[in-house]
Amino acid sequence: MPIVYRAANIVDAQLVLDELKAAGLSVRISGSYLSGAIGEVPPGDLVSVWVDSERQYDRARAVVKEFEASQRVNDVEKPCPQCKEMLAPQFGKCWNCGAWQTD
Ligand SMILES: [Zn+2]
Image 1: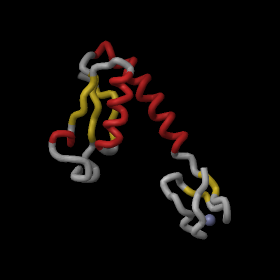
Image 2: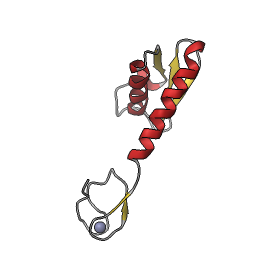
Image 3: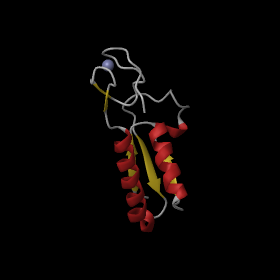
Image 4: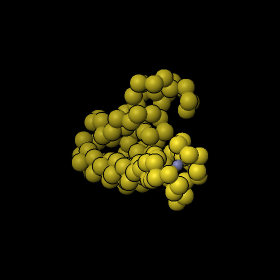
């Protein structure tokens, strides 16, 4: 069983898993999945996503690549509407001047 994706955490792994399942692939998560719920996974404990069959590997990788590309788009920093400081999208509020980010 080949690994198609090494996730940083279980949430990340689950997102990829859902994408792969939606593409009709037979996949599973290994690693911390069985050891605890979300939030209990120690940092650095990597989670892997596997395909059940070698024949599905290329298709699975294509889905993963698409997923990674879409993630990067969401990670693009935006300038603060007030002070133009570049902000990562996970900050709802500017850390520099306190203005709320707009979409
Ligand atoms: Zn600002």
